[in-house]
Image (cartoon, rainbow, N blue to C red; front, top):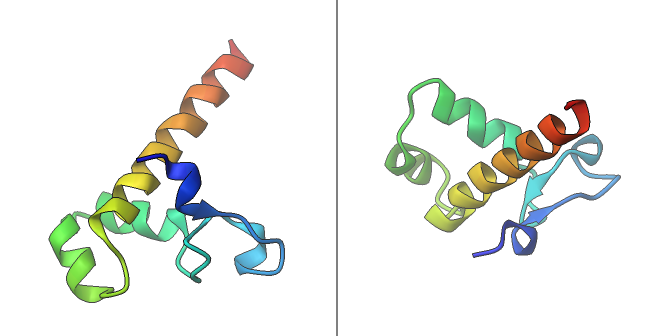
Length: 74
């Protein structure tokens, strides 16, 4: 799975924030749910249009951004 196939950025959608498959749910939304203690199963139950691959893509996207941020600031 390549997160680039799932995470989209559209200037006119959610202020250009990275979203999942062109939907209006952002990577940040999903990461915030996970950080607050929600499980993948709970997120999938609340948002039936999401898949476990979508959630994995959010984590991969965040890890890649963190990696790039570290390299830029090193």
